[in-house]
Length: 389
Image (cartoon, rainbow, N blue to C red; front, side, top):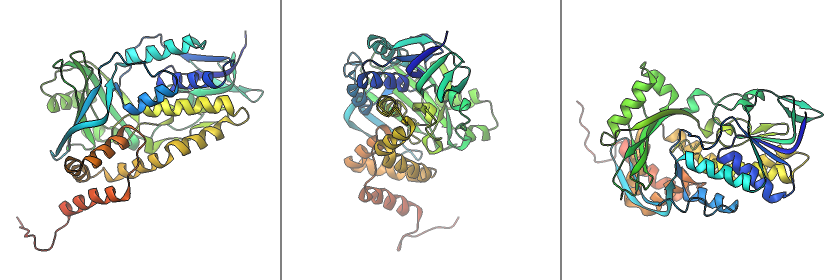
């Protein structure tokens, strides 16, 4: 039999759950259906990092205590491609929560708010009477697609996938660490740059570890992906032998598509919202999902226009910042300069965290501080002797 819903959300991860919960908060009596092809709990290849900025979004959804039982990680260490290092306490601690746990808790919260959650793999998306029609049986006034990097809905809408030059690939696993390890580590690699490994301690004697690089750089090696990704992870973090390794694609935000079509909105990874500097996506997922749910609840006649305006107002300046920094960061020397400057200036360190994990932008004065160090390393200065080999 045909079903009619006010909102159907496709994908039960952070973006989809946030969309459903926000719509429920704003329209308590709306009929909301959340579909996912998997049962929960289920694993999801990811760095598992929950930044303080993401916790702000959880609080806006009424879920401020969702991960309070996980120990915060108050410190961050970054090693640049050239070996510069900065380590300091972050202004607000981050958390590391396995997606097996985090996503299942979000789904439980959705159910607790009378959102129907159903296992269902979407195969077709058409229209009937001007409304989206899913698999010829489910009609919705609005559909929010939060079905990941390889979004079926995005393909069905005819929107292009993330171009290879704006797609990263990463491998993620888990390793044993000292129980008191409280520092998130990012270790960058000059070979095949942009490329880096990470270790994010969970707080229970294990850490999420992984390595990622741009897809074209991986293909340029001419070697099997498993050999490159697993090998470089072992090379950069030799003291942390990893288990349960899984690979995943990351559609970076400079290649983001239009955020929907008609009455269908894209959120999270499906919208290409992955920070190109850090690979962070959970904050973007919660923000975009919440904004999509808001548009579905309030803008009944044209939810896509309302959603695009909200995205622009909330993330527009930040995304333009990361687009520009992504271009500059193609030079490993730029990252060396940024990390070296951050090691000497705490406000630059804090800014890197805001841009990499939240919605920060770069004030001109701090941008110039990094650019000056970058240029001084790259250009000859008066009085400096240069030797020709």
